[in-house]
Length: 143
Image (tube, rainbow, N blue to C red; front, side, top):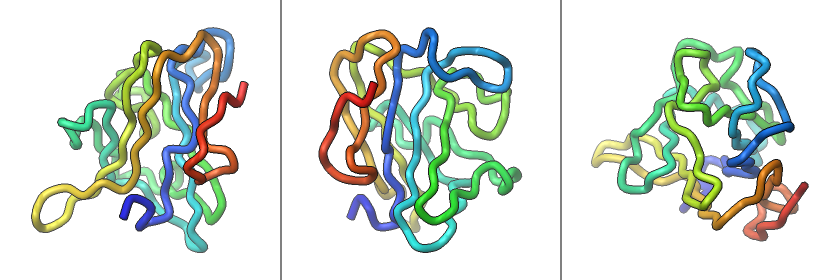
């Protein structure tokens, strides 16, 4: 089932112009992962994609648990800037404000299994959408 690990693509901003800035002072696109589980989950080794047909588009590095472990009820912001060389939480893809999908996959013996995914339509500049309340199936404009 999609929420098997308790992880959700919780919020996203595919056209971040004046919002949050990364550690390089860049206003890149981003999405947030929410851990609804009662234990810490390290997302290192999981795969994220903006193309459901390419589940292994970007793998979260395994060597940065201090950045990739999400505490119970916690959140992790991943920069969708297409520049994974900038750090463990910089995805190797960008988001399209015109609409697309974001998905989390894990490797299993027979291939890859979906953990969660969302699809979104056109999102305006500096507008954040997401699940409200956190981890629910209801999608709202949050900003």
